[in-house]
Image (cartoon, helix red, strand yellow):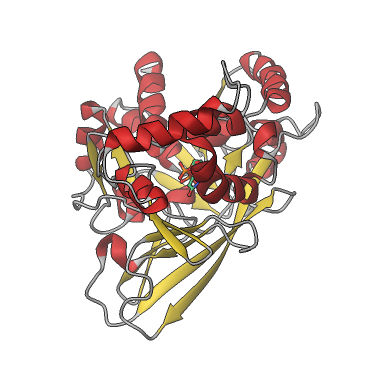
Length: 371
Ligand code: UDP
């Protein structure tokens, strides 16, 4: 098999690149070590419900070009993510907005909310926040931090909020309006027949080999069945430190374990996403998949999400973008720049906390340089 590009990984980055390469008359071969395409956006239809097997994926972007791009491959519904947070026996709307503040403090107006946050901030002396805790306290004050941020963040990242970078909490909008939309993005939705269908359409006409490891291909020059593989260039979307056998040390990732269950009831929690923000509940959130796009099935499927430190053999989900890992990544990136005919990309290849739209944008930028 002779091909212009060997693409390692069939997630959104690899699939976007493959689609564009094909359009430009290049040949591609995609390999994936899993037994399915689509990486972590993979959805599987289980008895009529699209299950987000690797965690909930809600497409959102403010970039019109990216929105139009994904809409070529699928229709999107009008889902708006409006998660709720449960803390003990209290329930709050997310993201942090007037509904949250009203419930927390029994107030009604934006000025009352701002006054309370200001008074809680005044007790602190935070100029330039140095970590997630300081950033959160500065934004929303102590009550919201203690009930809705501290426990959740420590469970998700396995680190104290004082040891995490401030930017993580800035992903969440803060509003003084009664608006529960979790994203500020202009466009939002769920593909009506799942993300796997999108990737399938992107990969139409491409050769895809599943259950194939890059390490094996690179060492042997063949697929597992002995088929020779020749390629001019590699696009590698796996973990950058794994590519280099972790020879400079391991980058840290968070992994997620899902406990998925079918329940013979129509509506378990009344919402797609419910966060459990107290430290003593072992999972971070429960996803009820039917609320994304399949409200009419008579039963339901839920997934409890448990966060854990990544170890070899687990799936890496989130890069831990603190200073220590940032410095190590830079060293790997230097090696990557000197690696001839290999391009690194995607959340794992770039070691960045990218959303889906950013992954596609980065892939398209790469394509415009490459083709
Ligand atoms: N977060 C929080 N409480 C919540 C939800 C989120 O403190 O109820 C914080 C937490 O630090 C998390 C970050 O906000 O890591 C980003 O959350 P997001 O929902 O964007 O994470 P993702 O969906 O990527 O897992």
